Image 1: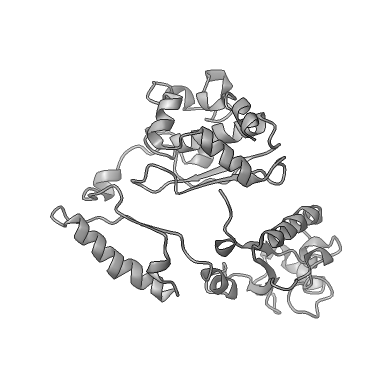
Image 2 (image 1 turned 135 degrees about the vertical axis):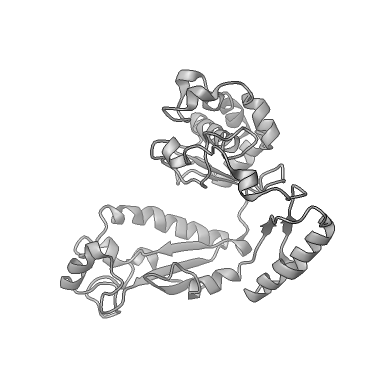
Length: 331
């Protein structure tokens, strides 16, 4: 996946003396160790023409929004990150000097970024894809429904936030077709443990959903297995020491709407190049994943305990490294 500078941004958040300096009462252990890597990413973003946004924390002067666990240390230690005059905390280290073309924004503690200056700036980056699935009566014509949703919901909502529907590249409205049965009638039943439980705590990012209780037509299960397979083979091929693969699907669309590879700076080539290579070798359509891993087999009882990943004891096909040689040759 290639980054489009017009639709991408790098956020450098909370990299302030108050959290990096060991002498600060709000110091985060080992945070300083991340500075060189973060600075390298920042420089690479500038090189690629990706805008850089520095987000600095601003606590209320009275400390009303300081986390309880650090409030007393913050109060006794000079109230860092509450004003430019704070002895420690407001400024960023030299590695994060704001340069021409960069943007510096102050984030109130509990804003969650929504309706802040950052939110306003990022909205200008645009929207690539909109997906809307809505229930309807059985006699509602699909084309009429899609027209209504497009003109009566999507367009005005986008306009309210400063976007023009004409600038959105992809709009999917009820991509599976009729959506008459839903709610308890369509969803009641066994869902299974959520992913974080089913992976005994998990390690990488996740998008919710579940493995257990889902059949392989659901990307909660099949897509996750494929992401594991791709990441494991990228590492096995020696292309990175660490890898996370993110695959995003929209209901009713066979191909993913997004595929992202993140090697956390350990890749021997760019993440984009690795992503392009693995995408050429793997069919990410759900039906193709089911066929590749033979997911219609009665294998799920063995996965009901001890996790789904790293299960070489049961010959789980997503743990195979059979893609690594082809990846090496392609890179």
